[in-house]
Length: 149
Image (tube, rainbow, N blue to C red; front, side, top):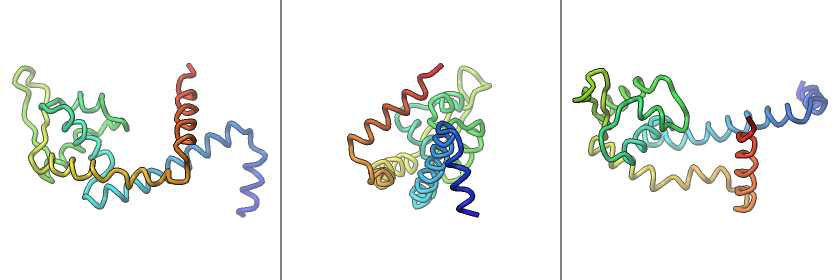
Protein backbone atom coordinates (compact mmCIF):
# COMPACT_ATOMS: atom_id res chain seq x y z
CA UNK A 1 0.00 0.00 0.00
CA UNK A 2 2.85 2.40 0.80
CA UNK A 3 4.29 1.95 -2.71
CA UNK A 4 0.87 2.80 -4.21
CA UNK A 5 0.72 5.93 -2.04
CA UNK A 6 4.18 7.02 -3.26
CA UNK A 7 3.11 6.51 -6.90
CA UNK A 8 -0.07 8.56 -6.32
CA UNK A 9 1.94 11.39 -4.75
CA UNK A 10 4.39 11.39 -7.66
CA UNK A 11 1.51 11.71 -10.15
CA UNK A 12 -0.06 14.54 -8.15
CA UNK A 13 0.54 18.14 -9.26
CA UNK A 14 3.61 19.57 -7.56
CA UNK A 15 1.68 22.38 -5.85
CA UNK A 16 -0.72 19.84 -4.32
CA UNK A 17 2.31 17.85 -3.14
CA UNK A 18 3.56 21.05 -1.51
CA UNK A 19 0.23 21.51 0.29
CA UNK A 20 0.33 17.96 1.63
CA UNK A 21 3.97 18.36 2.65
CA UNK A 22 3.17 21.60 4.52
CA UNK A 23 0.33 19.91 6.42
CA UNK A 24 2.48 16.87 7.28
CA UNK A 25 5.32 19.12 8.43
CA UNK A 26 3.00 21.30 10.50
CA UNK A 27 1.56 18.23 12.23
CA UNK A 28 5.03 16.81 12.92
CA UNK A 29 6.30 20.09 14.40
CA UNK A 30 3.04 20.69 16.31
CA UNK A 31 3.13 17.23 17.92
CA UNK A 32 6.68 17.80 19.14
CA UNK A 33 5.87 21.23 20.52
CA UNK A 34 2.87 19.81 22.39
CA UNK A 35 5.18 17.27 24.04
CA UNK A 36 7.46 20.11 25.17
CA UNK A 37 4.63 22.20 26.66
CA UNK A 38 3.11 19.10 28.32
CA UNK A 39 6.27 18.89 30.46
CA UNK A 40 5.03 22.14 32.05
CA UNK A 41 1.40 21.02 32.29
CA UNK A 42 0.41 23.27 29.37
CA UNK A 43 -0.64 23.12 25.75
CA UNK A 44 0.92 25.43 23.19
CA UNK A 45 -2.34 27.43 23.11
CA UNK A 46 -2.30 27.86 26.90
CA UNK A 47 1.31 29.03 26.74
CA UNK A 48 0.34 31.47 23.99
CA UNK A 49 -2.33 32.96 26.30
CA UNK A 50 -0.03 33.32 29.31
CA UNK A 51 2.71 34.82 27.10
CA UNK A 52 0.24 37.40 25.72
CA UNK A 53 -0.82 38.28 29.27
CA UNK A 54 2.80 38.46 30.43
CA UNK A 55 3.72 40.86 27.65
CA UNK A 56 0.58 42.96 28.17
CA UNK A 57 1.66 43.68 31.75
CA UNK A 58 -1.94 44.64 32.55
CA UNK A 59 -5.31 42.89 32.62
CA UNK A 60 -6.74 42.43 29.11
CA UNK A 61 -10.02 41.05 27.78
CA UNK A 62 -10.48 37.63 26.22
CA UNK A 63 -11.23 39.35 22.89
CA UNK A 64 -7.85 41.15 23.06
CA UNK A 65 -6.17 37.82 23.79
CA UNK A 66 -7.88 36.21 20.79
CA UNK A 67 -6.74 39.06 18.50
CA UNK A 68 -3.12 38.47 19.50
CA UNK A 69 -3.06 34.67 19.45
CA UNK A 70 -0.74 33.02 16.95
CA UNK A 71 -3.07 30.05 16.67
CA UNK A 72 -6.58 31.52 16.60
CA UNK A 73 -8.89 29.63 18.93
CA UNK A 74 -12.56 30.52 19.23
CA UNK A 75 -12.55 28.61 22.53
CA UNK A 76 -10.34 31.19 24.25
CA UNK A 77 -12.81 31.37 27.17
CA UNK A 78 -12.38 27.63 27.79
CA UNK A 79 -8.59 28.01 27.55
CA UNK A 80 -8.73 30.77 30.15
CA UNK A 81 -11.01 28.69 32.40
CA UNK A 82 -8.45 25.87 32.34
CA UNK A 83 -5.71 28.34 33.27
CA UNK A 84 -7.86 29.66 36.14
CA UNK A 85 -8.23 26.10 37.45
CA UNK A 86 -4.42 25.77 37.32
CA UNK A 87 -4.14 29.06 39.25
CA UNK A 88 -2.12 30.62 36.43
CA UNK A 89 -4.58 33.42 35.59
CA UNK A 90 -7.43 35.21 37.29
CA UNK A 91 -10.58 36.69 35.75
CA UNK A 92 -12.73 39.61 36.72
CA UNK A 93 -15.43 41.74 35.11
CA UNK A 94 -14.14 44.82 33.31
CA UNK A 95 -14.87 47.95 35.39
CA UNK A 96 -15.82 50.04 32.34
CA UNK A 97 -17.68 47.47 30.21
CA UNK A 98 -19.44 44.83 32.31
CA UNK A 99 -19.81 42.60 29.22
CA UNK A 100 -16.03 42.10 29.07
CA UNK A 101 -13.97 39.78 31.23
CA UNK A 102 -10.45 40.93 32.06
CA UNK A 103 -7.72 38.36 32.57
CA UNK A 104 -4.35 38.71 34.21
CA UNK A 105 -1.55 36.42 35.27
CA UNK A 106 -1.21 35.25 38.84
CA UNK A 107 2.29 35.22 40.36
CA UNK A 108 2.47 31.45 39.58
CA UNK A 109 1.45 32.14 35.98
CA UNK A 110 4.14 34.77 35.69
CA UNK A 111 6.79 32.40 37.07
CA UNK A 112 5.73 29.56 34.79
CA UNK A 113 5.75 31.85 31.75
CA UNK A 114 9.30 32.94 32.54
CA UNK A 115 10.42 29.33 33.08
CA UNK A 116 8.91 28.03 29.83
CA UNK A 117 10.12 31.04 27.82
CA UNK A 118 13.67 30.51 29.05
CA UNK A 119 13.53 26.91 27.81
CA UNK A 120 12.01 27.50 24.34
CA UNK A 121 15.23 26.58 22.52
CA UNK A 122 14.13 22.96 23.05
CA UNK A 123 11.10 23.66 20.84
CA UNK A 124 13.37 25.25 18.23
CA UNK A 125 15.41 22.04 18.14
CA UNK A 126 12.90 20.53 15.68
CA UNK A 127 14.55 22.75 13.07
CA UNK A 128 18.07 21.54 13.87
CA UNK A 129 18.38 19.94 10.43
CA UNK A 130 18.28 23.39 8.83
CA UNK A 131 21.06 25.95 8.72
CA UNK A 132 20.30 29.56 9.67
CA UNK A 133 20.44 30.36 5.95
CA UNK A 134 17.89 27.58 5.23
CA UNK A 135 15.60 28.90 7.97
CA UNK A 136 15.79 32.45 6.61
CA UNK A 137 15.00 31.21 3.09
CA UNK A 138 12.11 29.03 4.29
CA UNK A 139 10.66 31.95 6.26
CA UNK A 140 10.96 34.14 3.17
CA UNK A 141 9.19 31.56 1.00
CA UNK A 142 6.39 31.00 3.53
CA UNK A 143 5.89 34.77 3.80
CA UNK A 144 5.73 34.89 0.00
CA UNK A 145 2.98 32.23 -0.06
CA UNK A 146 0.90 34.24 2.42
CA UNK A 147 1.41 37.50 0.52
CA UNK A 148 -0.52 36.24 -2.51
CA UNK A 149 -3.98 37.79 -2.56
